Image (cartoon, rainbow, N blue to C red):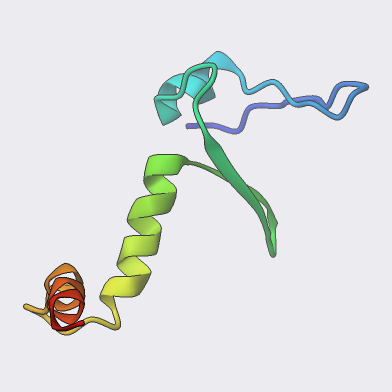
Length: 78
């Protein structure tokens, strides 16, 4: 998708144009996460943020290990 120009309003709000909303599959009322990166603002859906967080955690959990099962085992032992 080509870049689309947006303008910040007087109150500091930015309207996300329809082509971008459609591409991100977002609707009014959806939760989004935003943060600053080196080259600008990053805006992602809550679902994308969760998938990215799971990817980070997965790097530290060995293959075949279930953190849920480990937690349940610990709780049962308590």
